Image (cartoon, rainbow, N blue to C red; front, side, top):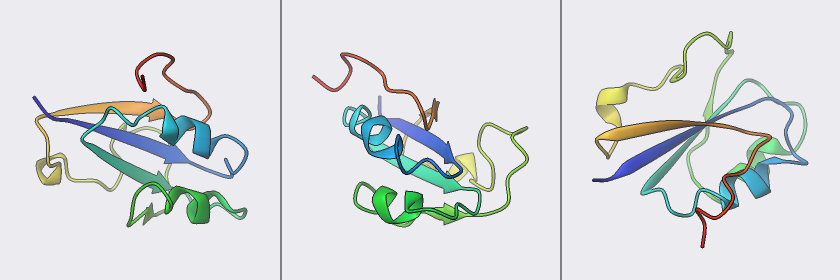
Length: 89
């Protein structure tokens, strides 16, 4: 089974690299950025491209992303300021 990890960001330049690094096990990473004003998007593009940019109200776990467009059959929302220990080993 393939897994897509989605990460929602807003001004997370200090956390995004660690968060995305901990998702190396995922088959696909989708980053949805809510108009960050720091280097979040630039850093995220080093891990996945494109980074979806939109205004997000934090109510939908897959904002602006059509689940039917995932390249996998399962999606995992991932906080942009957290890592998943041990999954990247």
